[in-house]
Amino acid sequence: MHKLISVFITVLIIQGISLAQNYRLVWSDEFNDTALNDFFWKYELGNNNGWGNNELEYYTNNPKNITLSDGKLIITALRENFGGFFYTSARILTRLSWKYGKIEARIKMPHGQGIWPAFWMLGANINTVGWPACGEIDIVEMIGGVSGDNTAYGTAHWSSNGKQSKGGSYKLPNAKLSDDFHVYRIEWDSQKIIWYLDDVLYYLLPFTPSMSAFQAPFFIILNLAVGGNWGGYPDATTVFPQTMIVDYVRVSELTTGVGSVTQTPNNYSLSQNYPNPFNPSTVIRYSIAEAGVVKLKISDLLGREVVELVDKYQEPGNHQINFEASGLAPGVYFYTLSSGKFSESKKLILLK
Image (cartoon, rainbow, N blue to C red):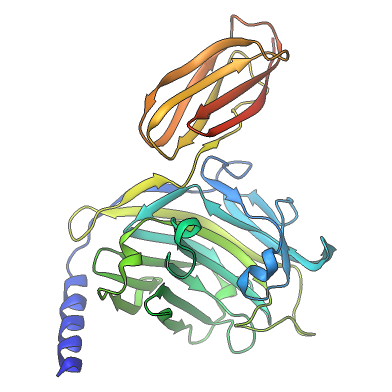
């Protein structure tokens, strides 16, 4: 009887999917800049004890491993000695997090034994509750090799009396995922997550009461791992370099239906002003994780305050201010953001 009820509920959900779904774009990175937008993304560096998976790569922010070109983000895995490891690659995550929505990316995958690209999400509370209690949504993973180069995996992980996971996969019939770009996406609301590859629905996961981790914000991660417990390790057939090429990453909210997108910064951050050097104006961007009094000031090389740009109460979110410096002498200055226990300074250069 329980099985029949479960099947009936699933059928009702699938029928609901067939109804028109209207989404509104709330965030995207089309990678049309010349460098990674550090207001959107931050790097994770090193090996971090194999990232819990006995991975072999050392993640860097070196342009050899991560760059933007022709409107694409290119993450490259190399066979080289660096930091005590034999491979390098890159891993980035968003400074923002989202609760619910359509999250998608258009990606051309790498291939080969021991190559492990991923487009995935982690609960923004991971530093508080740890993994897997924070929840994990693997929008797509590929485990390279003869039997894996054509298969996309979508999986959810959470904690309920220990680690739990459920997921599905989709296999291209006559091609590798590295042969062309494909769109990988989930549609996530308060009741379920649905996985798609190029508009083909291949897995649906209805939530149960034990899956409360998925009722909270998650941030996005893009990485290209080398080796690991799941897919194994490179062998004599593995060719380097390997590239994961990302055309775009987009987040949209469902305008009608169950659950709306909540978008919040994961933490405090102060971005490098742009342009820099500048004359006579530049834009300073920053993120506030908690409501409070925010101060942003400009100081000279001797530490003397020359301009106070912000001194007021602000809500959590992303903020920016245009700094007009036509009244200052050319030279090097520092701008400092402080709020609560957070304080960070960066250098800017005014030209004349």
